[in-house]
Amino acid sequence: MQISVISLKDYLCTMKKVVLKRKIGNRVLLGHPWIFSNEIDLMDDELEAGEIAEVLTFDKKFLGKGYVNPQSRIPVRLLTRERQETIDGQFFYDKIAKAWAYRKRIGYVENCRLIFGEADGIPQLIIDKFNDYFVIQTLALGIDRWKPEIVSALEKIFSPKGIFERNDVPVRELEGMEQRKGFLSAPFDTRIPITENGLNFIVDVEKGQKTGYFLDQRDNRRAIRHIVKDADVLGAFCYTGTFEIHAAHYGAKSVLGLDISENAVQQARENAALNNLKNISFQAINAFDALKQWSKEDKKWDVVMLDPPSFTKTRDNIQKAISGYKEINLRGMKLIRPGGFLVTSSCTNLVPPDLFYEIIEMAAKDARRTLRQVTFQAQSADHPILRGLENTNYLKFLIVQVI
Picture 1 (spheres, rainbow, N blue to C red):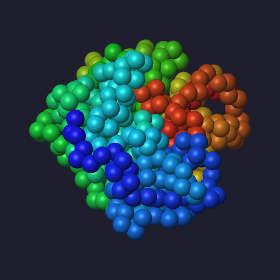
Picture 2: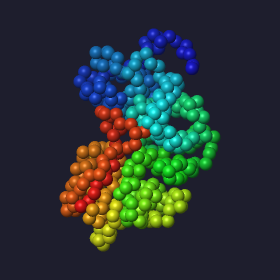
Picture 3: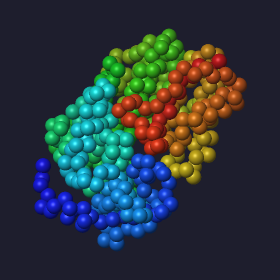
């Protein structure tokens, strides 16, 4: 561990400061790490984007330390509430080591989300682990500045075969950063084979969506194992076919997966072949159009699975998202034989669980169908939820019988 050349007392005295207004929400005081611009009274004039600063209440009581970006809508994100804790390479090493200990303790080892941003005390950092390979996203300028230290910590803890950066996301531009992706280690084959629930998949960490694979649905994919047996199954927005391949493996009579991306469908077919499945097929087609047209044609399945992308990233478009979710679920229900099952998801964190369930019930009312809940759950536990941090409780996964 590198030894500081100044004393801790001097370090604390020389740290730049952010002072909050008198009236701020209890949200920050009770642990939320985000501090919005309208909550800040004073900010040190010399503070540069990416620097670490002390955050003080209006009466100069220490609240925490975090990274700063004056041009961001969220100018401060807290990293620690401990005044004596130094933000350095050792800090990030310890955070990652603790996060890894948690994943091992709850049984997520081979493939998992190693760091889930705020839920692991490192805002806007995402690290996914695929066997011995790691994919990193640094989504705010303040955490991007620590990328070398984060990579170093991964190398020390895991001795990885490879590390890849997937920072090709528009949110970085809001922080004044460019989009980018590439190797943070020696180059390697970016098509990585993994095993999930006893099934084989290829994860394309360079060209796939997000970090290449949706680890958050791991446990939910296992939850369909009973309802799909001997069933005709339709999966819309299938991406690389993970839900559909699980359905075929769990004994479905037939499985059809739909996705608008030809590349995703080709990957889905490859994944099906890896598992020697014959009762499954995929089509590159607009799932929205297909659901609408097939409901008019009175086509029917025993199980319909819907896993669409997020419908909105901003509160301004919430009503549009509500309408979108209602529409696809209404269409999905009309395609289900009486007594069949709807498997539906939402990854839009701005649509909370209660609202999502309300949307599904509205769709059922319009479809003149009755619902019986089988299960309603969130993302897998390697994406931990912290109460009070709404963005950590983002995934809704619902199975209902449609009567």
